[in-house]
Image (cartoon, rainbow, N blue to C red; front, side, top):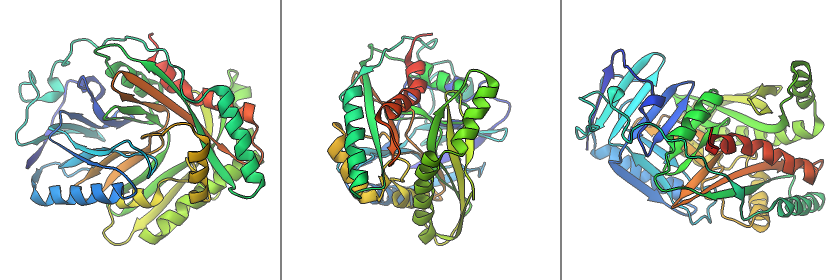
Length: 410
């Protein structure tokens, strides 16, 4: 495999305007990566899926001839990945190496080609290529109740509260789903552009049918610097500015939400400590506004020791208390007992890894998975001792809003 990365000066189109018909992408604030086609695909299932993918990726790197004239995070040989949430999931975890990757960061742009691959009609510059399927079509898809009904979800929350009272778990994250049939030739570029425009601070992702706009960074590694953003604790936005600000302040002082958040931060710090010389987390979480919700957020930083890759760290961190619960194993067992579906890649790691082991992975939230002609969206909540089933159900509605709006015809 011959990999060549060259810089592009003054591109006429942005990354979002360069999405292919079946997009592979990871973008935030307009910067990131877009993949065209598929040069190679690595797959794994089961409890050793991270390790199997990491081994296969290393084998591929060792056989590759890489020329990188840019030397920025995301240039050179990279793979996009989407990994199943549970060890028991029947859904494949994947690393996909595109034939052509377009990248941008801090005002610089580049193209990476595998074995000299070209995009049809690009005249050597994919940033100037015509859209492969003509104008983006806004088809509109209406998501309806999936396997878990609203009443079923509230009953699961009741059952979880009993488990918390019995001391089985301290926190557990439960999800529900919505689904719909998609029309022939469904164009995913429209929903992705809507998500990027409405949620620019989120990581807009699309890998092998798993897509969305995640507010939560699982882990980033760049030149030995490790970072993560933990979100746990949610409140809806207010329409009046003064009321909205009061909601954010109340969230930051909510005993229930602070307790839920503490579980998630402690989980992240403990998972990173074996890989880092030191790990620092925000002493006090901050209320982070998104267009539809407030979240309690904390940033975590560390300095990597040894030669671990971002995929190694993702394997150790996943699943965090923010998407599973505390203690981890007991919460995972309770999720399998109370959720009537396989989460697939929902709440699993999604992102990219480079040949040097650096990369950036978010948690696959505020999104959906396309399988055949079905799209299924998920949304979940952290259940702690003070949780109320009706309130948790209402929170899932808030968390479904980004993907519901993105799929709804404008």
